[in-house]
Length: 183
Image 1: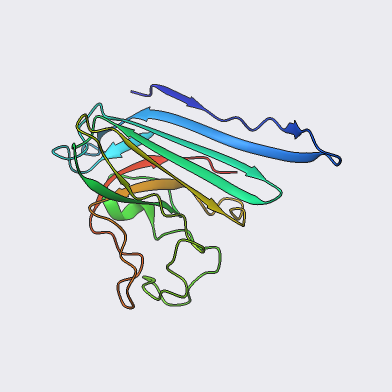
Image 2: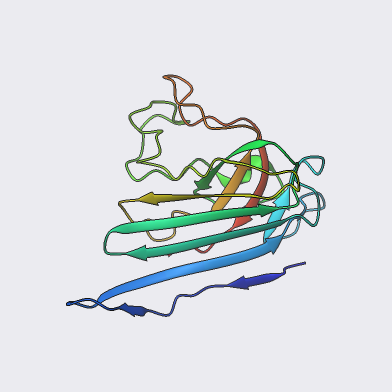
């Protein structure tokens, strides 16, 4: 069941000589098992690593200089490094339902493993390592904004994101997913 989902889409004015409109989104959910279908705000595909009831928070802030995204996990496997990325489709009952990584400049070849496209300047990479309680967080800043309706979720992956040619952007199996209404 959903803990709190809040979209802060109301515009805020930033104090500066010229007003700059900023927007943002904040989502905080408990992971639920993907089995059984239905629509869930946050799903786990591997309860041994991301247990039912573990919590996820994603915050997005946009402004004239780009986008800031923060991810926080609570109660997942302790002492583990995870990869995490923004994906193009919403979470579903199957790991692959969330589609590929969101890319500012789309790689014409999918799945994208070319470092010219699969890199932290063109995608949102939120790799993190959890502490002894299974809590951890990461943030990313990119100099662009999401295209309307093309960024729909954050997926937590099996291991840190790879960077080498032919493997760039790969982070192993999809362990969990949270839907985010990015602006």
